[in-house]
Amino acid sequence: MQKTKKLRNDWTKEEINTIYHQPVLELVYQAATVHRQWHKHSEIQVCTLLSVKTGGCPEDCSYCGQAARYHTDIKVQALLPTETVIAHAQKAKDGGSSRFCMAAAWREVRDNRDFDRIIDMVKGVNELGLEVCCTLGMLTEEQALRLQEAGLYAYNHNLDTSEEYYDEIISTRKFDNRINTINNVRKAGITVCSGGIIGLGEKHIDRISMLLTLATMPKHPESVPVNALARVKGTPLEDLPKVAIWDMVRMIATARIIMPASVVRLSAGRIEMTEEEQAWCFMAGANSIFTGERETLLVTPNPGLTEDMEMFNNLGLKPMIKERQSSCTTI
Ligand code: SF4
Image 1 (cartoon, helix red, strand yellow):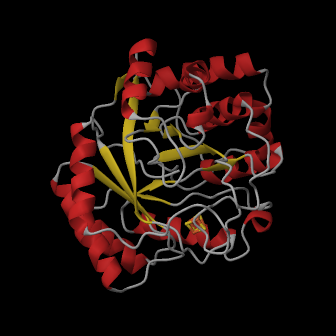
Image 2 (spheres, rainbow, N blue to C red):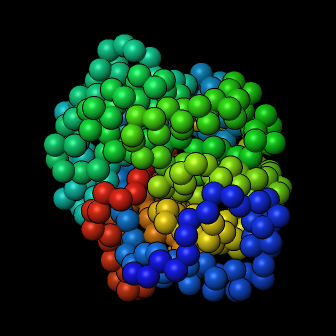
């Protein structure tokens, strides 16, 4: 594949704003062109996500059904046994996934027995030959190093939203906490998976600002998940409107253009999209999805593997073979 452009880390808000606000067909055409210069455009990375510890989180992310303070239908689940997690990973591998992502609803990692068990899980999934990813909340540099030594390939830590809008969505931590953890992950030599969520009531300029933060990191995240808000009953954002498909397409296309080497993941919200709408997202440069059993995208529904393979057939797409060149984790 010919890479005609160099990666840039000096994007300005004005430039990203101009890209983002192009007529949508122009934007998709530009993004599809970049996608073809940097990636095999018919290949989609298939990842499986497992919630290894669910609910009961002390944070107050207003989009999340796992926050203990909201009254949602989500069942709290303590940390799963290591053997159960490894069995899920084997099943994911058998189903065609090349990456397995483990999520725990924690504010931060603590140096306790649960973390020791996570280390064992990372080792076990790694031994299956899967790329292993985690999302566990905030992480110190030392903890990141332990995970790296256990074989962790990628760590997911989304920005959530823009720095300017952050306090509207979460009060129990700061935007800078996110950046610190991402920096710790980088220092440990683990690849970074970081993107965000749209549909939280933010303005277009917030989305552009979030993309600016990602695209001006010293190294772009290897994986950039773009999530549409999954409106969970009982959370403060449950009544917000569904994210318009063209908003998702704009986000994905802009991310593809400004971070051309990254894997851009069509993440939460896929369950509410038609196959045609997902095709637009792939055309705009998305080249990764989560799949697996239904209801496995953390605590929100997700299409199942059978439906996804049918969609791949219909669209002439195929699962990306493991290349160990990008990261993949959570929503
Ligand atoms: S998004 Fe993560 S940190 Fe926030 S409440 Fe949910 S589980 Fe906790």
